Each structure stands twice: as C-alpha cells, then as structure tokens.
Picture 1 (cartoon, rainbow, N blue to C red):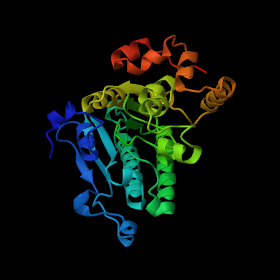
Picture 2 (tube, one colour):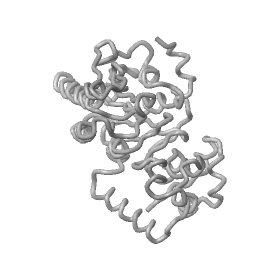
Picture 3 (cartoon, rainbow, N blue to C red):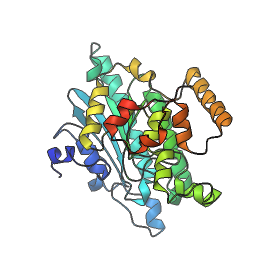
Length: 318
C-alpha cells in the first residue's frame, strides 16, 4: 500500500489508477469495491488469448473527504490503453448507481443533511474509449454509464478528473462531457478522436500526431480551459486535484448545474454559437481561437507557468 502523504506531492500524470483513487480521498478512508482479489476480469479477453487484469484495469471504491462520502472510479491507462469493456463498464455503472442509492437512503433517513454530507462521484479518466476486443459490450457500457450519470443529475455531483498520460478520448470523451464538472491539469488531454486516429484517417498534412505542441494546443488542458470544455485547471499533483475536489464537495447541487456543458437549451445554444464562430473563422490553429478570445499574445500562453497562465488568460465567450 503506497504512503498516502507521499502520494499527495506526487505527479498526477505519473500516478497509476489505484494511487489516484487512494490519494484523492482522506488518508485511510478508501475501501476498494470489486478489487483484484475478487477476480472480476474480462471473459472476452481470455477467450481471445489476451492477458487479463484481475480488476479489468479499473479501480472502484468509496472513501471520504471530510464529512463527504466519495465514490471513486479510476481508470488504468497501462492496461489496453484504459479501454472500457463489459466488466470495467459494469464497475463504473454500479459505482454511480450505489452513490445515487446511498444518497436517496441518506436523504430519506436524515432530511437535514448539509450539502457537504451528501455523496459525490469522482471519475479519474485515463482511456481511449471502447475496448475493441469487446466492441458491442464496450459500447453498451458507455451508454449505461451515461444513463447513470443522468440518474445522478440533481442529486449526486459527478466530478471528472483528467490529468493522466493517455488522456480521455473516444466515447469516454462524451461521457466526461456529460458529467457536472471537469477538472484538468495542463498535461491532461480531452477529445473524441485521438491524434493518431486523426492522422491515420486524414493524413499527416491535416494533423501531425508527432507534433506534441499541436496535440496539446488541440486537446490539452490549457486549450480546453480557454474553450470552456473544462471548468478548472490545477497543478499536476495528486494534492492539487484532491484540493479542488474538496472545494467542490461542499457546494450545493444547484451550483453544479451552472457548470455543465450539456443538458439544457442554453448550453445547446452556446454550442451552436461556437460552431457558427468556427465556420466563420476557419481557424488553422488553436492559437487563432485563443486570440479571438482576447489573448493578444496567444502564442506566449503555451509556455506560461500555470499560475501566470490563470492570472492572464481570457476564456472564449460565445
């Protein structure tokens, strides 16, 4: 078992799924659900002769931050790129379902609960999306997770953390967008189609996936913060992500509705204005959009330390 205090100062980017799950809640409070000793691994991989993980590459459990119950889902990118199959998807679904059921039981038995005493869900994404080995089962898992997020809406805040090596891509990019809040580091990446896939389908002239600057200007945390696709940008430490979760945990549920990117007529209208702006601008690089947002020296934003970036940056308003 890793040292919790040492975890706090460690890099979120480098941390594995279990370390992130342990580190985001209070010391000694995490209890893993359907862990490796339960041996809930993919039956499909075994049939295909592929290696399996006894937790199917996803850590689920429950802990606490202060008085807040925290249901945690943490994906492991080192196992088949964090891809989601039948078992991993079921673990995600049932963790959110348990959080909603626990909320309903708590509210029924203790009507005067404070906002801080109500449960939250935290998902640390590190995934390329559907596990191709399990195709339809993986797609169904995505849909079922989205369904549980909708069940949680207005009851249990679902908070996304993105700052791991693989990023959050594929169908899980849609899932992340459906959560209430997205917290990223500048090293986090979020999108639908991954850089390598864009290059494969459209050619290197359209998108050079080996150009790390281009990749991060298109999918990285700073760009997503400017675009409004992520709500908060934090330092690359487990402690920084944990501190932001703790800050969010005490908010009333109504505050989360205002942070959402989808799910209302107003957000749809905002997205349509964004599409119209893109069609009008025909930007060749993300920095064109950063300049449109009011950043006079857009190119300089890339290399700014995070504190300076947050102090100076202007976010796109449409």
